[in-house]
Each structure stands twice: as C-alpha cells, then as structure tokens.
Length: 479
Image (cartoon, rainbow, N blue to C red; front, side):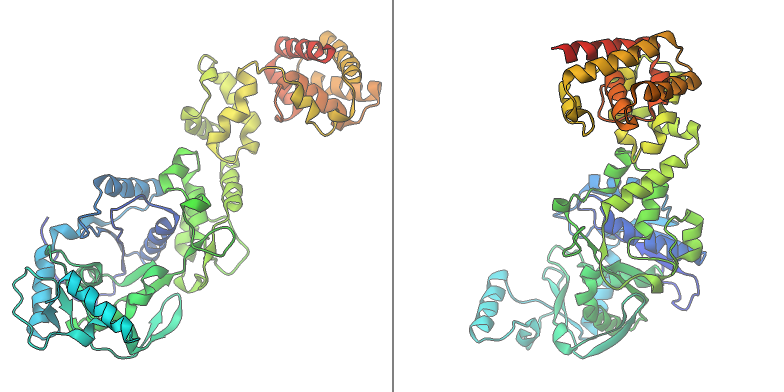
C-alpha cells in the first residue's frame, strides 16, 4: 500500500474515521461510534475512512479484522477509503518520531522494566505519585531504534472544547512522559493516531469516553508536532440496563453480528444505535437512514451515559418487522424455519408468516411461534393447569365443555367466516366467558401456550388437524 501523502489541514472537506483495534468482536459501543462518525461524514457530504489500528501485534487477530469489516458492511456503513492498516505505515511513524528526537521532545528510555518498577515502588514508599518525567535521564543517548522512545512532555493546564462534552479542562498533573515507539519498532496508539489523523486529513475525531483522560497527552503532542488538532468529540459510555456501569458481556452484551444472526433487521439496529444517547429534540423514535443523515448533530448527543434497553430494541425491531412487505419477510425468514417445516409448501409457510408477523420481535422467534403449524406437539396437561382461566375448572367440567365445542365444529366448515360464527354461537350456547371458552379451544387445537388469532389459526391448521387434536385433549382429560 502506498503511503498517504500529507494534505493541507485547511480543507473544508469533512473527513471522519472509525479506527478499531483488531483484537476482538465489534460490540454495541464501538458500532455506535462508527455509526456516529459515518453520519457526520454523510451529512456533510464528506468522507468516512476505515483505519485498522493494529500496532499491538501480540493481540492482533485477523479474524477480528474480518469480523469488523463484515459488521460494518451489514450495518451499511460504507467507507470511502480503507481499510488502512497502521502496520503498513511504520516508516511514517519513525520519521515523525525522529523529528521529535531532533527537536528535543523525545528521548530513548534507558530503564529496564525491572528498574521502572523499582522507581515506582520508591515513589510509593515516599508517598509520592510516580511520574516518569521526574526520572528523565540527564544525558539521553542517541536513539538507535532498538530502545523504546518516550515523548518529553511539557506539563501545563489545558482547556479545550469537545463537540459533545462542551468545555473541558485538565491540570498539569494529567501529563507525564509516555512511550511513543515501542521496543519492537511499532508506535503506540497515543502517537500513531495523531500522525494518522493529520496525514489523512481527519476533521472530526469521534471516540469513546475511555480515551478522555488521555486527551491532555494528545494536546501536548499536537503542540510538539506543530499541527492543528481536529474537532474532538467524546461519546459517553453505553451503560448496562441498570444505568450503573459500562455495558459488558455479563450484562448480555452481544457482538453486532449476533444480532444479525438472531434476526434483527439492519434498519432497526441502525435506528436503535443512533438513538442510543442521541435525539433530534423531538419525541420521534423511528428514523429512516436518510432522516438520520439529515437530522444528526453531535451537539444533541447526551453527555451522560446511554442506557442499553434491550426491551426498547425488541420493540423497535418488532416495529420494523411489522412494516416489512410479505415477500421481503418471507425472503428474510429462509434460514429461520424449524426443520419440521421443510416439506411444507411455500404458500402454506407464507400464510403462517402472515399470521405471526405482528407478534415477531426478531426472526429467531419463528421456530417457537410456528411449531404448532408444522408439528403435532405432545399433549400436556400442564398447559391446562398453568392457564389462569382453565386451572379453575375440573377435568370433568373442561371435558364436557370441549365435547360441546367439538359437536359444533364437526358439523360446520372451516372457512374463516364460518369459524367466527361458530365460536360466537358457542359463547351464547355455553354462556361461558370468552377468555375461558377460547382458551380451552386454543389449548386443545394448538397445544401451545399462545397462538395468533384463534379463528385464523384454526382455519390455517385445517378441520382434520384441529378435530384430531381435540380428540387427543378429550382423551387426556378423561385420565
């Protein structure tokens, strides 16, 4: 890959970047960061760059890099340049590091890890914070590229404007000398991203709150290198549902492709991520991608952490599923059908989908919601004993009531209109409450704890299947 040439920093072109480390899977927080950076670029008709920050070779994972790209592609976050890899650009970093050495702003680290630990323990024993700048060598040797290289900081108070957090400040104690080139010749994040952002003409650096304590270091580096800093935007953490801690795997956090594999729709996921800590100042919650591009504004991102509400994600995904045309829903459902549906005709499966579409929250629910249409589930008395309406009756009472229902169903056809008439007639004949009568017929014909509308379900199951299941239920009630 040819190196990127330095470009003027006074360009008015908006250029944002997403710069993950390929050490693991792409989770919700990082995906939201990528989306916000993409929205800023697209709104300004600018450019979005994918940069792989792979300088930590001990943790580099090629599969993780591929997973990141696949996740962004699924989310529709297309990039204009990249993926650009820092490991391909080592000469650039070394060249900039030598400039710092020549200007007296960087020096070879003369200490071994053991010596550093001894210095740290000594400072602790004296009741002082350990600061590397207190132990700078008085006569630093020439850097031969085989030793770690440290930046010679110039501690000072800083004030800066953050596009999300507003005015921020830090005292001189926040800045210490830090490594910019490791012993293996690779740059650290603190140094490499500063060089890359300048050479790639990045106008907005949008990143997570975890980097906020390091910003004074970055500001010190910008000054030492004599370059103008980009607009900084710090995104607050995505929090667990209780709002008390950063979202993690123990809170049920999944990687982005897990949501895809569970049948979450990409438009719902993008909508959810965009409104995870951002709103347009109205009560609107459902946004198309184009609406997000037109409305997004970093100043509307909340400063406090955004709570990950999985119930809201399920609601939003269900909304998008309900809006799908029948043909598109069938196309998306292809990999989610239960094995028992294999030999059923497409027409029947389309009719099943039409019945459950309003109940689906994500496509991986299809097997559980459709099993009653493809499998003769085992008769289970527990379904009756657990039903809040039926559990109040004896088996004998339920058997007599179900036998009456069967007599009416046997003599009538199973067209939808006729079924509705039959069910209404049974209400009058038995004087039972709808909740009791319909619960009994539902359990007897579906052997499932819940189902779509009763008449619609029975019509699709067909008369023979419903009557067979009613007979099985009657036999169970006789025991």
